Length: 519
Image (cartoon, rainbow, N blue to C red; front, side, top):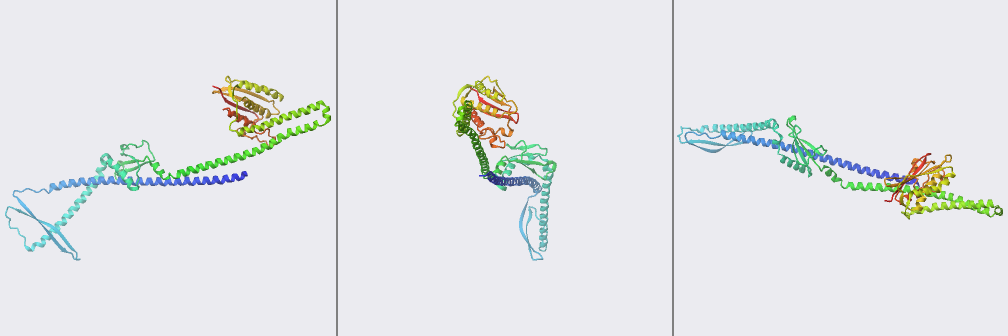
């Protein structure tokens, strides 16, 4: 598959996933906002109704108090007055009917009470001709009684209103509100308005911002889940009391309706992560395939050179004149021998690839002194370094240098690092190599430092990857197969250690190996 096709598919899938995530997140935001507004509106409406209920309770209380006082005064006023002689009264119910000019009929029921005493009456009589006048007088008296009753009730209401306006606001809130009843009012209003059954706590604050009453669980600091309502809003502004209600589980209530959306969002994110991982893996495999192709091309080029040289030298040996000249014969056989060694070395490099097909290399671990191993490898390379006019120094600062290693593989690690230092030297600058050891935090450190051509910073982290070779523009101009440092990294890791590279272009490279000490 072409890289452009992969990029196109990746772009389409990423846009689709991002769009899906955006729509889900937007839906969650809209739903949360709607639930918050609904909750806020329900609580505010309920608390307003609680305030109205408290006002109604207060009004009813004052009306009842005034009725009781009025009844007391009325009973005192209508007490019968005792006279010197006993008397008795007779009450008789009468009905008076009158017809209005429009034809409607008026019926008035009234009582006539007559007093009787032991004293003889002084001849009080009502003549038959005066009956109509007596009925009219009674009707008038009834109307006057109704008017007086209306005025009394109106005065009673005015008095209650005046008491509420002037006397009620002067009382402390503790005397005006029953806090247990307030708690039940809040609960019942929340249930009746929206079926809202959530835990809450509240406090009442007086005009001086002092907490008069507080239920357990009310937070010490302000919170978004606290709602405020004025108690008795008709009080003077300087005497207003406040009710503050806190809902500790507001967030859980708001999110309760989104319980089915959260798993969907999580699965979408998992799919997106899986897709991204798949695309990254695909690109890595694509790059690995390209590097393998480069490796094969470069390997063919590297193997072809010694093979062609050996073939040419073998053809020269067939010439009879060559056999007659010992010096020429010796030179040709020497060329064949060198090229055979070179070919064998290249084949050995290729065989190192088999290590990467195993999860862990088969190592024969033994206790060895790393300082002795470093000195041995340095002595082997001294002649090769001096051949190019360079120097190889050894600085052994490690006092504890006993480690458990596979001698053959770890020797190859040091050989690979020194070969790279020689291979990537500067042609016009004498080569300087330094091998050093030291101890730090219970570990042994081995470093190999050179003054070669160096590596760009963007390539430093990639040099340990298989088949990776620093690009120079010509695939066959890059030395090696890209397996040496990958082999070094794997062997060090299999020993339980680490390796890192520090390099700067044109200033040289330093490889630092860290191995655990034997404790």
